[in-house]
Image (cartoon, rainbow, N blue to C red):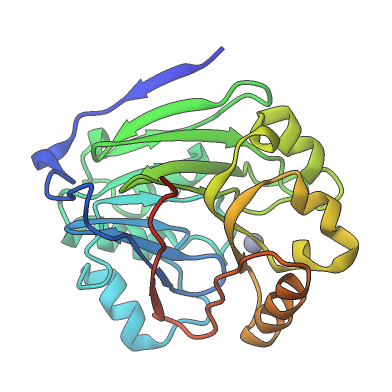
Length: 259
Ligand SMILES: [Zn+2]
């Protein structure tokens, strides 16, 4: 059973994002990415303080490009995926940005900046066997529960469609349970256009796990550039198509969806 959560689109967000425009992806740091199509910008785990130069942090906090986001998605509250002060400052500078995240993330942002309009927050809490559907910024998101490897904090994965491309960012996954997590959520029977997965999934030993999350293009994540490069060369040897980011704010235009 699916639950539907709908929130109002403030100021008609995303309306300018035409289906024909290409979608680009910008790596920020760790597991953080920006997706852009026309005027629409989605941030996933991208507003963080960890390992980010002061100049980038200032752009995040003041919501200046490329951080002029419409929709902020956070998979979980760990500090390498989320910084409450930066998110609250971005939302203050950027009055139309919406946040979709687990309860502890939303609570931390509201504590950091209590004056933010509650209508700008969507708390997601999918059950293990029941993804939640959320409509925000003219996008439809499927939100899945993926238990965090260390059983704390709540971790959710997002599947969203931008410009005809279906992208999956499951947050932090437990390699021991990932195959059954994908099977439980039906993601093993669905081919995403782009799947952003932890770098260690691309080790030859973990190949069977990777086959349980089919995608046309993989983005190895959650590691330093050297580990990302290694994951990419292993993946290419095993014929997986990969997109490899090795520097912060590097941008790539994604290949269009298959016809
Ligand atoms: Zn993490």
